[in-house]
Length: 84
Image 1 (spheres, rainbow, N blue to C red):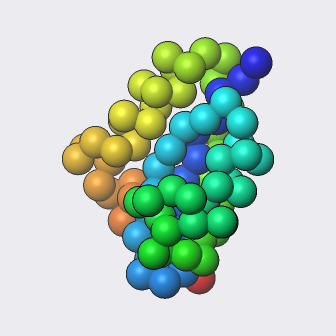
Image 2 (image 1 turned 120 degrees about the horizontal axis):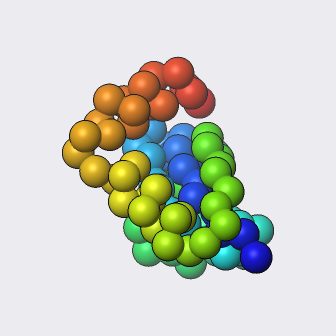
């Protein structure tokens, strides 16, 4: 089993959402259907990054890194270069 870290960008406000899951298809469907509270009012969403990891621990570590304040420049760069 692989685990996925993904980044979604809101077309509505340009903000990014970072998450991790064992089933990307299931999780993306939940976002699209408005079942995820943090993205429900920010739809439509676009996938701007996907990374695969062998363990949930590795995926959670990467998600934490992406959500950290030291990754602010990375997030700003994603917003600017992936307009839409």
